[in-house]
Image 1 (cartoon, rainbow over the protein chains, first blue to last red):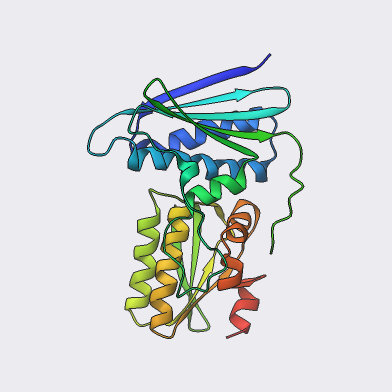
Image 2: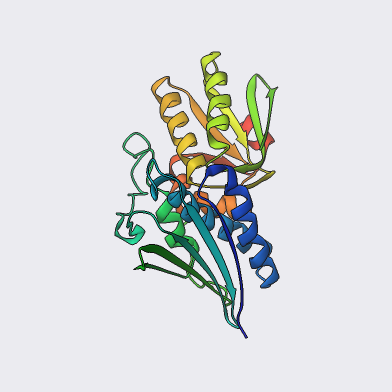
Length: 145
Length: 110
């Protein structure tokens, strides 16, 4: 049986640590290794900060984070009711450029894509729903050093 | 986040504990900026006790490194492990920065 828990807070930076810790605690309970939990925290932060910075513009609104523990995977859903924003349409940065040519920003969404196994964006009922999936298997992908 | 700065062999060594995230990155960048403004050209950053770094922290590092480069200085790193090491790899920071096994190795290279 999947276990689902959620937290809903105003989308403000002051709540970032609490929201990230919520995800980390769920991931730990799912049995994910300490190092992988650290990576999941980074992915969660990037998705959460994206909502905090861009979803509501000058207005205020909530962010909901849902963690679902299934037999073979751990799922994080990040939901807001702000303006539509498909983070998957964001262009990846060129990470092979040398320092002087590299743009200062743009790494957040790229980090999410690289740190989770599957990512999905849905616009549903006037809400943005970002789903991050972490499978139980050890990742086979070897990153370049 | 806690930032501790000491001087070893004349080089400022900045050790960061906790998280460099969207909340704390500006403070981290400000600390580095103060060190550079005081005239330092080489800064060693020890991330041994860092829990994680997000893109906000990477942005602070890149901004600081660009400034240092324009002043003929450089940033060195040590203590990378776990998620911090992974994030550095993914972001291509291994190819633009010099990363050392230990503080001693970094200081010995200067």
